[in-house]
Length: 124
Image (cartoon, rainbow, N blue to C red; front, top):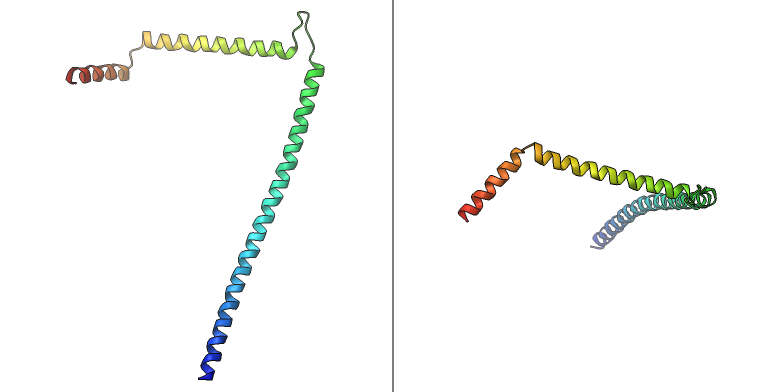
């Protein structure tokens, strides 16, 4: 019987060695992933810093180089007003087009919906 105990003990040791090897491989994989993630984070931090610096410089240049026209408005203010005016014109054009569509063109879907609404109110 003493031979069985040592055989069982050796099997347990071998099983423990295999489990340790498996865990070592997991640790190696996770270490590689961790290193890759750290590198990515560092790269993104550098990129963020670079972009923030560019933004600050652009804002400084914009505030310094913004010329004023005779009325006292800066180029940025004029451009903003032009954009607002363009947005207003487009919204107005959009509203006109919607109005023309509903006035000139009868949509089968709209007719069907109004018919269904009429049926529902009739039977409800």
